[in-house]
Image (cartoon, rainbow, N blue to C red; front, side):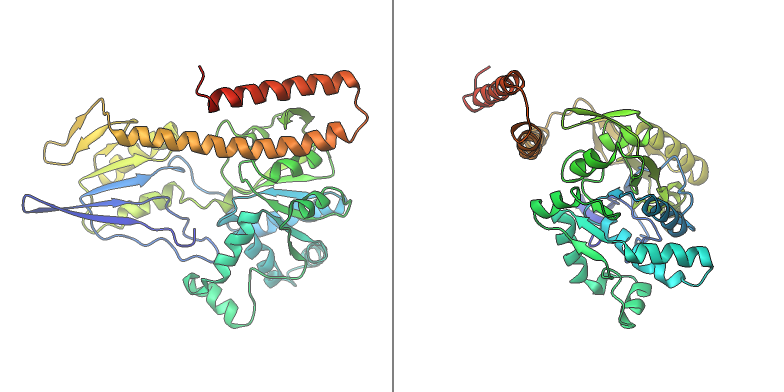
Length: 389
């Protein structure tokens, strides 16, 4: 994403210099707007991500056409295209794609017809964070790739086009689900766990006219992954919905480097690392990539376990167990993160209760049961505040 970095660390100890490189998340080599990842010439040790270590991205060449076909067919049906999207990076890439489709006009009559439908449909970015991130992109155009800079020099800002609208307030967001107008809604979070996207799923996932279009990785255990994996029913805000909407996943929009480009990053070192650590990946992705690296480059590879500590010397010793106060610090950060998520869920619950219970003709018995549940939740929160067991 814009502004992401690879970290190079030089350590001098006992008159010897050691260089360690941390890749962070390696970007794809063909992400619109952004320059390709920088290749590093030398390192003693490499700590590298492995998200797509077991696969290649497919369909990247024709993803614009696939995207346009899906959107056009949904708009033809009078439905809504709901795109769960990461607020930073992926949303801006989708806006770029929507704008760049016009460059392919005139290919054939079918494409022209689909293009006109797209241009006549409103496109909503419904995520305060995505809106703010888009402004950051606009304010840092000097970091764009050369192709995008050339486009902008012609007077075309790929993050702006007719029909694009930003919904900033909660009321504006709710209004999207009260309209029957076919449209495209891009909303966070990308894995459908929290945020406004859950409201758009609630109002569209049961509708066979609509499409839920995924354009990013869905982690196991998330609502997004459940939908992508073909679940027939899902729970949203505690209510069960049948999945009747069309579900599509375009993998070509991934921000992560695939297996080939992860290997290319390793190949690019003039002075190859002595040892590589693979992190940030599911077990199978890490194991497959490990085998590929050993087979093709013959560099030792370690997949570290949580809490392991390594001494980077000629003996390459690993110590376990590892007990460091830093671990406890991160555990505290996890608690704070869960509290933040709980706060967002409570805000969602307040909206649902108001709209689905208090403003509808519910029986006294239903309201009483709901009241008891809210009282029990309140009691548990008070227990936490008072440090009770």
